[in-house]
Every structure is written in C-alpha cells, then in structure tokens.
Image (cartoon, rainbow, N blue to C red; front, top):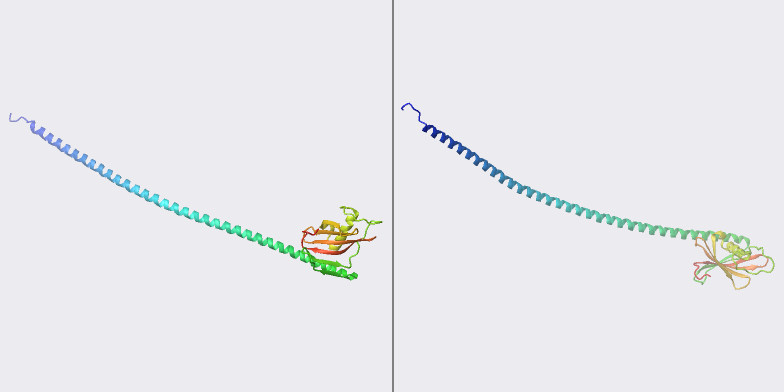
Length: 243
C-alpha cells in the first residue's frame, strides 16, 4: 500500500490550473469589452466633432454665397447705371446731330439766297434795278422788284385768254416766268397754286423748292405778243396763308 500512487493531488492540481485559465480568459474578455467601450465612446465624440465641423462648413459656405450674391447685385446695379449712361449719351448725341443738321440746312439756304442776290445784282447791268422792301405781311420776309425782268416769250397767237388748267400752254408759260424770276429750275420746284391776280391778264403763282428751303409768291402780267412777265416777287417765310 505504501508504494501506490494517490489520484487526489493530481485532480486538485488540474482544477487549479483550470481555474487559472478561466481567470485569464475572464481578464481577457474584460479587456476586450473595455477596449470596445473605449472605441465606442471615442467614435461617439468623434461623430459630434464631425457634425460641428460640418455645421461650421455650412455656415462658411452660406456666408460666401451671400457675399457672392451681394457682389452680383452690385455688379447688376453697376451694369444698369452704365446702360442708363449709354442711353443718355446716345440721346444727347442724337439731339446734337439733329441741331447740327438744322444749322447746316439753315446756312445752306442762307448761302443760296446770297448767291441768288449776287446773280440778281449782276443782272442790273442790263439797265434795270433791284428793289428790296420789308413787308407788313407777317408771312413775307421781303418783297423784290427787279425792273430788268422781261417777258419770257410765248407760242400763243391772237387774243390772249389766261388759262389755269395744269400743263396747258398758258400754264406752262406761267411756270416758265416763275422759274425765271425765282431762279428755281422747273424740275426743282413745287407749284402750290396759280390763280387770278386781280385782272384777266394778271396771275399770282405760289411755289417752293423741293427741299422746302425756298418759298415764293410771284406776281405776273401778260404782255401781248411777248408772254408773261414777272413784276413783283414776295420771299415767303411760310406757305401758311400764302394762297
């Protein structure tokens, strides 16, 4: 009996070793759980920081957009002011151009009148004189009488009868006499009216140049065998009430 091995101590040793293994395992499980807990908390706080950062980014982005919008509004207002300035400048230039054109037209008419007066003065060498008189008629600038005017000739024979039918022989000879007195070519003249001048052998013709810069009322008298002769010419300011 003395030499037999006893099983009890061996089982006790195994039990201790098993308890030690369980303790180590429990410790490791606890460490793993603690590690998981720490990681979870860390992720939770990290998520809050990300949300805060995202909020800051949104705020910054919104502020930038507002600044950009404000800048766009400023640029739009500036563009609108530039358009108004350009329009005002264009209107000013158009008005200035119209004024210059009117002035040029007035100067051209004045020059034409002066040249015509020189031509009429040159005709005095034929022995006539030119008289210019102011008129009490508000539509008449001046009245001109040129004693050198002569009858324009005629194709008519026999007793003369004044005719006021357009394009008749007598009508065309009246127009010829008016052209002679005014210096206007018949192709550059509007015949506004030819009417009786107070007698069977007297007529009055009212005409203007086609550019409307010259207006005249010419008094004509018939000379037997020689045709119509201008005797007086009114330089008109307007055709209103002229015939």
